[in-house]
Length: 598
Image 1: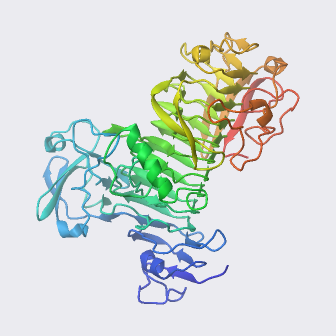
Image 2: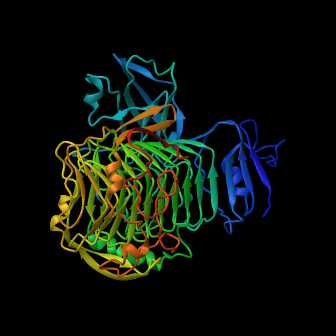
Image 3: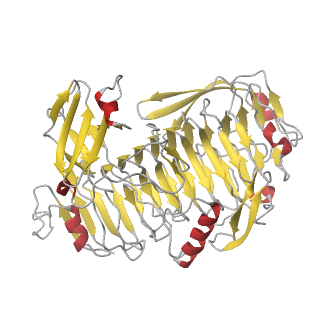
């Protein structure tokens, strides 16, 4: 449906009409005027405001669109510029700001805290200091700033009844001659109300948010977030420097936020969410695509229950939880609880504590064609799920991580992946977690995690540094189903695979080369891998149904699986598909462009 197009410009005025010739000055003013079908076009420049959209669209075809003007760079920041720094000594400077400067929300008095958060014995605040776009690290004590040695630049703040005083070490820079910004707003684009549906946000650079810890039991405020809504499209943005979370598709807030860190508390959270409209008709169905997300200390994208029925695709996510001054249980490039029928595909994820973390009720989920490398704990962590879920055609290349795959789930299918590194399989008999009816949020039952009931077909498994391959499955409690896998460089098969192809002497010498915006995978292949005659095309029929939920493996749209194309979209040999992500022709040294996807 067609509507009104409102224009916003730094030369505008909020008392004007919002036309191209008489633009508004702030995005927030346009948001107050926009109705379903309207478009808000923002022109070149930096806008320092928090957008709280009061109204959403009515349907996927009648939404409200916020967009940067084509070909124009538009930044929205949750920070303000500070220029009146006074030198203390050496490289240390200070500034004193009246508390009124913060207009009711002071990030330097606002602690990071909540369920499953571990502060490491010190305070952490949602404030942050930036020098020419790079953030400084918050010090634990005032003296750490004054007497600091080394290259890391630190800051420290105190707040009394009237003023906020900030000390910062800027190295060799004079902060009054450089761009110095500080967090002043909790978020950049986030509705205060839930149920603001069908919004599109595209083409912006959004930075600098004093975001809180966002556990699955509390409201998940982020630099940009949906706040328990339906049908958002967040696309082609640059999102960075959120104190905790970049994008949230998460839960609403209520009086039980951050009240109790237990499994039982999350069970009660789920029950309340079901009473607050957690269902296929009202929640989720978001699309997050083509964004670059970085420098978030909790998660690049988080979502408790609200990411269901969504598509997360073609994003670049990097440098997540790299300061590591605090810890907890929620840090990952993508961390979802209840990712029902959610597709996570074609993403590039690197330099994150964990790449992908799927926790509780990962069912009907598909994780496909993702490129993961240089993640320092694991590429994939699946926790207390009963399936069915599909993990196919992924490149998991974080060779120095503790566990390339950390599997505390059952009912997963792992198909045509390239796995480099350790695979750990762990039961969890202390937690009984939900499984659901097919393609629904309706709870069908609860069960503990014995482990097993997984399917592993046609993967390339390459050991690094005497790692185990798939041998940890030898003692799985439930049956496991394996065939067509190839084990290289010392990787060991599971005893339950009847005819594994082992070439423990062969090192494919995998490396990846980054050239500007492209990534190339170099590896050495052998035609012998093709000659494993037991290998089959993977289909829903082959995978059968899961032990606990008693459901078949189906795609996120309910259609049956037939994995007849590879990572690059090339047709598979249906009579004898090649192992791993690529349908190879020939042998020897190969160079494959793996990002961006063809």
